[in-house]
Every structure is written in structure tokens, then in C-alpha cells.
Image 1 (cartoon, rainbow, N blue to C red):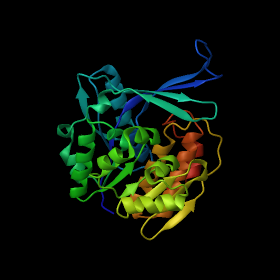
Image 2 (cartoon, rainbow, N blue to C red):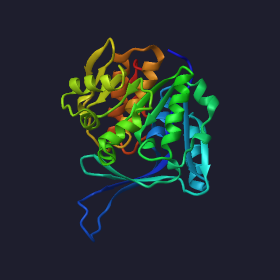
Image 3 (spheres, rainbow, N blue to C red):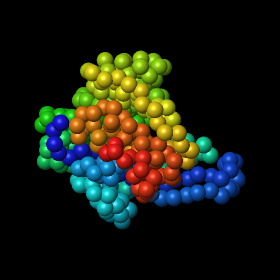
Image 4 (tube, rainbow, N blue to C red):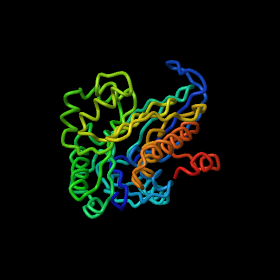
Length: 312
């Protein structure tokens, strides 16, 4: 494995988390839990890689406003090396995250400064020195930031890095259109792909995990496929390894960011020594721990240290 920083490229935004105590009725009112926390899929991956002891970097854009100052400072406190463009025309991004009583989340994303990243904003040195670059489809659904995300992946790949990709949202893939999404990702070099079950189904038309993974490996030229199966853990398929990995049963509180922490756990472990099975186990431990708490980046506690002991 090439040594160097694991760089996530994409969104750094504020999550406004809302979990009502009762059903919301038109024109009605209720109590609930509301929190404002740092988020963004790519930034979450970078933060969790740093928490797991990996060399983490992040490339993205925020507004030239106090909320941008605060969120960048928070990511730097996590131990992430940041290369941030600042937008004068757009405010720092915000996502409204609606969480139901079962812990499932639905998101409304405003197109803030995180959608303003341009190829000219990219830190060439950070990307060409990176060991790995992680891209999420949130950076590909519109342009900008699509051109910047593709350029970052291509630049890093040409310099010898590997690249991972998270399809991010089955609803956005469906709304963009299957053919347009395929055309968009055709220029993306992919060594590891992280779909969840719904994304895998919409990308391949298959329903069974083994068949989804096989179809994705054909599409992405024998990339490692890590299929996230929620409470059922994950299925990993690579050139010389295939296997299901069960996840620990937990009470789901909030699914926000669980997939991002899963991706980070897998990358932090796999890029160290290439052990796919160990990477899957750590990924499951991260994802199941996050889903049992509120928000994408809850403070690490003793329970997490116990669950991840021997896996990091």
C-alpha cells in the first residue's frame, strides 16, 4: 500500500438534526430533539479516519462567513489537514436532517458553498502526495463541484493513489437518471466502491448482494465492492476475496453519518495492510456504534474503544 494521507473531497456543512417526539401534522406543533452539528459526507469520512489514527485530509469549499470559520476549525481540531476554498457568493452549506422515530433519516440539502468547488481550487500537492482519495456522489450530481471532484480523483490516480467512491443517494441517482449518472461517473477512476443496498439495486437492477457486487465489479473494472447492508452488516467482493460480515445488533437512534463512519473504518484499516476481512469488521463496528447515537460525529466513548479494540 502506498503511504500518505487519505484525502476526502467534497462537502463540509452544518447538519440541523430534527427528531420530533410525535408525528408532524400540517399546521401543527410538537416537541422534539434539535441539534446543530458539523457534517457533510466527505468531511465525516475525513474526521473518522483521523479519529481512527489515520492521516486524514479534506478538500472542499465553505462560505466566507463565521459559520465557515467555525466548521473548518472544528474539522482541524479533529486532526484533519484541510485545504478549503472560501466563497463570497454562497454561504456555508446547511443540511436539514429529519429523523423519524425508528432512526431513519431524510435530508434536504441547500446548494451552499460546498457546491462551489472549482478545479482551480484544488491543492495539487496534497492530492499528488495522497495515498488515497475518497469521492462521494454528492460532488457529482451537479457542476460545480463535479469537474473539481473528477479532476481531484484523476490527479491523485495519475500520481499513484487509489480512489474510492460512495454513490451517496439512490433518490438522487434516480432523479438524475441512470444513463446520465453512468455518463457522469465514466471518467471517475474507482478502486473501491461503497454502495448501500438501495444504491446497488438501482445501479445494477439486481436484488441479491452477491449479484449486485458481481455486476458492480464488472462495471468498475474489478474494483473492490463493499456493499453496506444496514443491520445485516456488509458484503465484500474483491479479486481474491468474497465474504459476508455480520454487524453487532444495536438499537437504532439515528442513521445520520453511519455510512460515512463505515467508509472511514474500512479505508483506515484496509489501506494499512490490505486485509479486507479486518477492514469490514472495523467498518461494521464504526457504523453500528454511530447509528446507536445522535448525529454523524458523536464524541468517542469507552463503548467505542471496546468495540474497536484489536480492529484498528
